[in-house]
Amino acid sequence: MANLNTKTISELSDLLEQGKCTSVEIVNDVLAAIDARDGKINAYLTLDRASALKQAEAADKARAAGKKGALLGIPLAIKDLLNVKGQPCTCSSKILEGYIAPYDATAIAKLREAGAVFLGRVNMDEFAMGSSTESSAFKKTRNPWNTDHVPGGSSGGSAASVAADEAVAALGSDTGGSIRQPAAFCGCVGLKPTYGMISRYGLTAFASSLDQIGPITKTVKDSAILLEAMAGKDEMDSTSIDLPVPNFAKELTDDHSLKGMKLGLPNEYFVDGMDTEVATAVWNAKKHCQELGAEIVNISLPHSKYAIAVYYIIATAEASANLARFDGIRYGLRKDGADPIELYGKTRAAGFGPEVKRRIILGTYVLSSGYYDAYYLRAQKVRTLIRNDFTAAFKQCDAILAPVTPTPAYKIGEKTNDPLKMYLDDILTTPVNLAGICGLSVPCGFSKAGLPIGLQILGDSFKEANILKIGHAYEQTTDWHRQKPRI
Ligand code: GLN
Image (cartoon, rainbow, N blue to C red; front, side, top):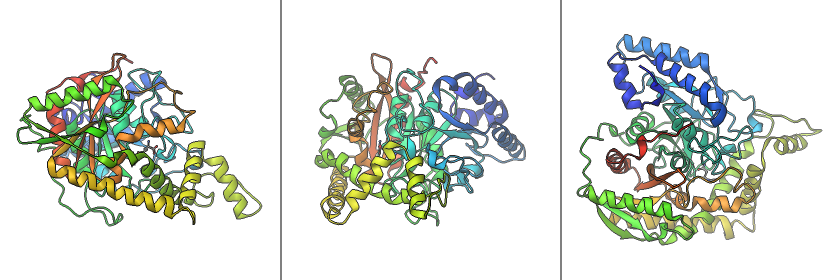
C-alpha cells in the first residue's frame, strides 16, 4: 500500500489490525516524506530514524503476539519541550542545546505503553513563547500551504509536520493558543484539553497555571484517540484531576446530528480588525451547525477584551519563575564566570533569545514589590472575571463557536519587529487558558490566497466529549479537512 503517511491514526489502525500494512511500512513512508519535503518545511529539529524503525519493529512483533490498540505502531512527532527518554529536549533554545531527556513525560510514557512510535522532535517558538515559531533559536518552520507564510506557533513544527504528512499526528502544548492557532494556520485539528486533564509531568513549564499538553491531528477522531490515551490522574502532577476518562473516540459515531445542542456565539469574538474571510468562514460554519440541528444562542463574554493584558502579566510572571532553573549549573549550556553570579548572567545572556528575555524582564517586573498589587494581583482578579463569564455562558449553551485567530497565516517576518502586534493575535485563544476550559480548532475554510481558516469550539471544564462531538459532526459533513497542500 502506498503513501501510508497520508492516512489518519484511525485508518492506519484499521489497516494494521487487518494485517494490510505494518508499522515498519508506515514509518518508512513517513521517513520518505520527511526526506522529500522537510528541506522545504523545516518542521523537524532532530529525527531518530534508527530508533523509530526499531520501535516500529517492536510494535509489529507485539501485534503479532496479540497486543491491540489504536496507537500500536503509529508514528508521532513530538514538540521539543516534552521529555522523551534518550532524545534531545531543547525547547528550541540554545540554553538547552545538547540536553538529553533522562525520563519520559507521563503523557509520553502512556503513549509508549500504548505502542506509539516517537519519530523525533519538532520545532517550536523558544520555550513556547510566540505565535509563529520564528522565535526558535534553530530554524524557521514554513507553512506547508504556502512556504512564504508562518505555520503559527508555538507548536508550529507539530502542525506543519502533520499538514505535510511528515507525521501521522503530533503533540503540542497550549499555554495561550499554541495548539489551536498553528492547527488553524496549517489546516489541522488541534485540541487544548481542560486544565488538569493531562499530567504536565515532563512538560517543560512555561506558565504552570495555563500549560496543557494536547494533540494536533488530521481528524477530530484522531484527537479523541490521543486524548483518551494521555488523560487521567498522575501522582507526579498534583493539578491532574482524578476523574474517569471517557471513551472519547468510541462516542464519535456516524450520527452527525446536533439536535438538542445549544451553541453560543459570543459578540465579543468578532473583534475589530478581524479579517472578513475569517469572519465569513466562521459564520458559514455556524450556519452549517444549524443545518445539522444545533440551536444558536447569542452570548456575551464581556471581559474577553482584557484577556491579552491579563495573559501577558500572568504568563510572564510564571515564566520568569519557571525559567530561573536554567542557570548554567543544572542543565545544558554553561558559560564560565569568575563567580556563580557572573556564570548565571553570562549563561542566561548567551542562552536565551530576545523574546524569552523580554518575557523574563516583564514577568520579574510585575512580580516585584511595589508593582505586584498593581499588576499581578489585579490580573488574577480579572482572570476570575473571565472565568465567571464562561461559567455564566455555559448556563445558556453546551459549547461556544468562535474564530481561532483574527487572520489566516501571515508572511514570515511580517510581525517579528513588533511583538505587541503578535501578542494581539492571541485575543481569541488566551481566554480559554485563563479560564482553564477546553477548546478545539477544526478546519472551516480557506482564504482566497489558499490559506486555511480554523473554527474554534469551546467547552466547559471536562466537557471534551461535547466539543469533540460537535467538531466531528462538522468535520465529517464538510470537506475542508480532506484538502492537502501541494508541496
Ligand atoms: N502565543 C502565546 C504566547 O506567545 C501563546 C503561547 C503558547 O500557548 N505556548 O505566549
